[in-house]
Length: 136
Length: 137
Image: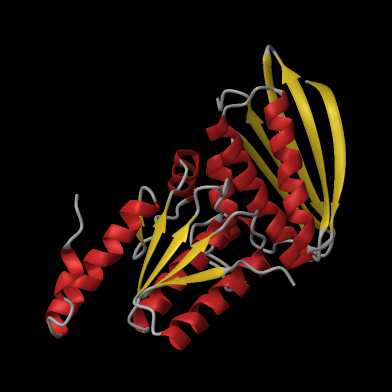
């Protein structure tokens, strides 16, 4: 069966969707991602949809589900790289992706996740002080 | 109304959706439809074809390039022989679904295209026709 690969990078999981999604494939991704979050204790999920040419209500719902499920499991989700035509279409369709963080590209998405992780760590403990040596 | 190109696709499984969406894109490209308008049309088509698979176990779609008073567009006709829609007005409302979805499919698809027509006879099936013009108007 076809599957979309999930990469682990430090405390984050990365997914790049490079093929046209059909419903079952999207559901498999949702399932795989949640399992991976649980197995790896990942603190963030980054989904790159820059090569996805359409997002319909089903796929939009899956993105929303992934974000809410991950949040319950203590991981934030950021969707990056949405094409302008897809954004225009989604809003007209009536789907606003509430509760899903978005960023323009992978780099900005990683920054956002790092910031979120940094904020959380400050609340926990300041064990990782070299966290914010990013150069903006 | 002149029909310039015509094609029919059978949709019986979920995997048929991807080639179908590509075919719609091809039709849009052929008449020089902009990317945004293509995306709207394909997204609407994706919603309608999902309904066909989910509620009627599939059906067929007629794809046409049509022309009318200097306007060119793509017309898609979705025909199924499913159970039909008991309450069309209700089905066209945002957030209403007899399945467990968001209920955006039909009303969302209608918002995305220029012309939308739905005919349904309970027990006989449903036919949805949409037209999207080249310039989106």
